[in-house]
Amino acid sequence: MKSKILKIRNIPANHVVFFRMNVKPTEILSAILLLSILFLFLDAPFPTIGLITCTVVCFALVATPDRTLLEMNEQFMVFYSPKDPSECAILYWDEILSWQYVKQRQCDHLKVELINGDLHDSEVYFDKRLIRMLNAYAPGKEKKTGRKRKNG
Image (cartoon, rainbow, N blue to C red; front, side, top):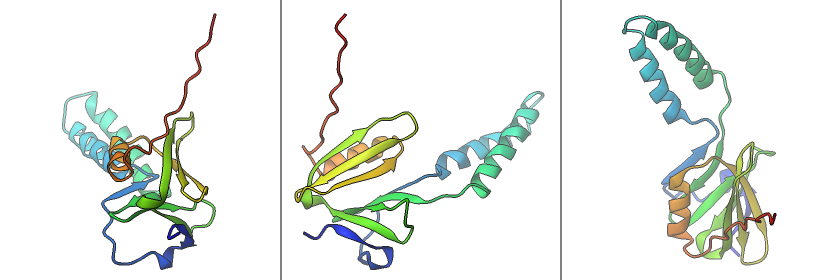
């Protein structure tokens, strides 16, 4: 088994990350910031809305912490540990038995089961690109969530 938990400094250095998911949605916040700056140059009441939005978004971009949840490349995906910032789980695509995207109220989870029975869980935020990448690199391994119907 090549998949294992290791220190971040030991991740193979020759990989190119093509997908990274962070806690803070920087791209969306930047787009909202640009839009709020444009609002400053319009007629009332838009400058007030723009100033409030600009302030809130600047606070979110500068003051709130950010961390990487997961990364993907051609050979493997990496789940970063929320408990120990120096550790991560490296999961090779060919060793994945199944994966499941679980929606929950506070945040979604991606659960990956390896061929040796190990189960890895990462907090994620809905992103269609994430689902597409998983279907492309671990095709046919998605475990669907069963919904129970109430009989009434």
